[in-house]
Length: 78
Image (cartoon, rainbow, N blue to C red; front, side, top):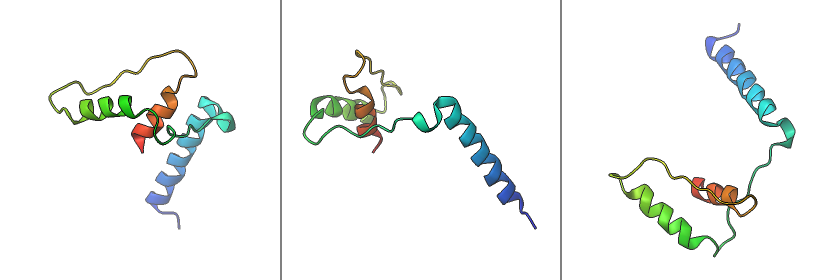
């Protein structure tokens, strides 16, 4: 017998698979966080802004390609 939870899990997995496929499938690149000792200044600024509950709820990071935005985002998310 198949439970409702199993059906939901299968449906959720199919939706996730479709999303990954849309984003590039197996070519999807997982970025590593900043190397230890780097990005400390900007990470401190971001941490201060995040802890400011009266401020904005979004931080916009923009720079040229390949300067480390994804690594910075990976560092923030860990």
